[in-house]
Image (cartoon, rainbow, N blue to C red; front, side, top):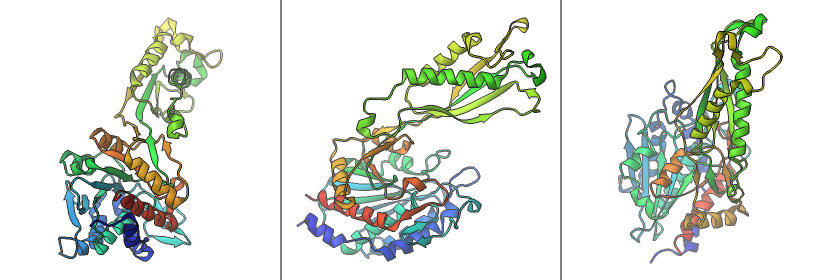
Length: 433
């Protein structure tokens, strides 16, 4: 007979803080070697894999010490993934915890108040690169699977944990969850809710933004700045053109009516984030410049191209900056011009608010944290959208801190991680009913 939900909670208990912190200390000790910023820094996720396997293999079928089925899957030397399965009794009943990634973003020790590559403890704070994103979650889910392997509750549902490589950078593909999906190794997870554990603040994250990187190259005419009337200043043209493009964008793409339902903090935006030009003297108006940025609306590229084409046709009507600022030199038959280009797009995601996975996550959050307030972010999590497109019921949550996500002096709170463990236990127990 399968365990009752109350018995599941009693069996799985609370997070073993000492074991969790000990494992996390080992993982943060590897953070220096799993920074993901190719070509300079290519992570060696198997350094993290080793510690996870050391924790789980004693309770696995591999050693005969327990029921956990552990599969170390590698597509690129030294960059493995781990699929861990605790078998249930009812075929087709499954829930999964996915997205705990074993790479981290870069950290410069000179910019930090403490060593980013070793775990330090300050009261409730667990400090170091990866504590929030996402080695803290790797340790947390490892502790959950270890407890399942040790206590062996009889569950209807199979519980699967997937620890992945290569989440923080998409320059190299075919290494992590994309390859696992392509090979069909996660297909059985489509039969139940998939909880992507890589967000923050202990609440369900139900939506993310898309992102299209764009570049606006502006061509003018180089000349001595003391004779500005003989130049076409690409910097001025870029500023005025971008202002016009942004005005048209916000007119054509107003806030979506479902933004409030999903709790997005901002509407879709189009903004510059980088500026470059070829260089030259301070008394030289350059020939060209480039502004780069991103826009968070799908299917907007044709509209931006339309704006640019219209501005090029009517560049003489664009606002200028002072009596000799101009974008057309009729005597020389020269006109300033713009070209827009786009890099690879990333799609946003809207989680299914009617799925059982969402309702179970909300109930668990309210039960453990004391309240539930789902939210959305306009940051991008492209892997989630790809899973959703493949037919997975993806729900997302996380137990680090958004305020320290990808930030200097990253930390998480041990008390939050303890609550995260209780949320996982509640999810498992609810799905037994």
